[in-house]
Length: 455
Image 1 (cartoon, rainbow, N blue to C red):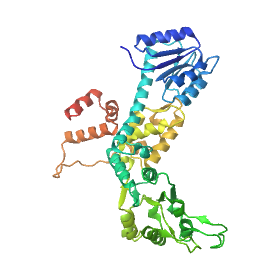
Image 2 (tube, helix red, strand yellow; image 1 turned 180 degrees about the horizontal axis):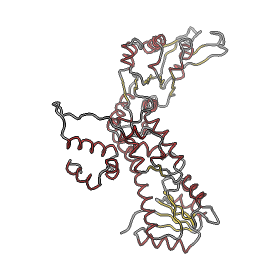
Image 3 (cartoon, helix red, strand yellow; image 1 turned 135 degrees about the vertical axis):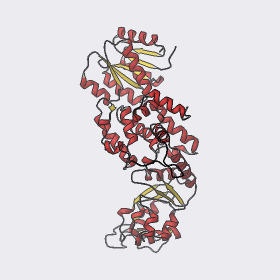
Image 4 (cartoon, rainbow, N blue to C red; image 1 turned 90 degrees about the vertical axis):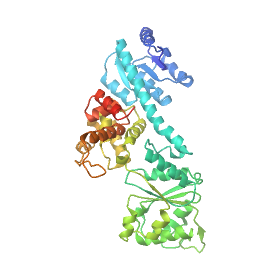
């Protein structure tokens, strides 16, 4: 049976090239391009794309590591397997850092060749499916998916939220974005800007925590030369800078009460006067505010103006924490690792641990943990030992009694059913991984899922 995969073979030994090509054809791989001169590869990549490349490390005309770097720069989606005459650990580690997926030591047995090839192609398919899983679903939900391209998700709740954000983006009303620290509030604010009619205008982010009552008017309204001591030139304020665009007010929940009143007047009157000037100017920026605070609670505590909250909350978007959308963790992890300077992948055990952890720092924490783990994984495979998270907290679950809607205790079978289905969904419906997390046999999991009506 012919297998569809375009494979590049580069080795200055023609006998070895013929041998490898013969082994691959026996296994059904017919789209083969053997090349003895590595200097021809660059021109070839301009005409054809390859799923996989076998590269000899030591070649006279062009070093295999330099060729690997060239391929990864010109065709990053091509998985590369290095071939070496002897196991030179420093060279192999360097190849891993440059993006090689695996390595083989000559002489190569047919089963070694096919096993390495199948693993590399499976890794490529997995990565592409994760990429498409988030992109294709968003393309169906959104009219302007390119505006939200930086937000990676497979969560239904997030897709609904992004569609709502897109609808609000079409108007000029203020938008309030809430959510825990690290969930991506500024990323969503930029997406709202990019999906709006103001996309060609500026996006001006302002950290409201850094504003003091004495500097607010000068920072927001601007000032004219000589208006106060130290004003040696005219200064354009944030409102004028955001003309025709979006003014992003970050950490608005921490704004002092006296500044809140001044901001409210801007929202109500849509005009301002620079400090030291007599000329009133019109504010022409769309307001998007964000906070990790509970503004309703702050209103009750008299720390946030109720009338300002009313002005901001007509379009309210709440970003869920990562713990509330665990099905996004594998997709986000693949996206983060895909941006690393070399090819790095998660072991199934490490991915299961990521899903089990609650991520109090949200996406920002996940990104930091994965970037650090990628540096520690010298062979390109991230294992649980590379993840700097509280393993005990990730595995521990509070003991609670499961009850029925009428208040009675649930049968053990129902508790087991809900737990198995929750784990199965949390790991992206990967049966092998779910079986490992649940510590049961794969056949047992198959049988139980069939009983629960899962196809």
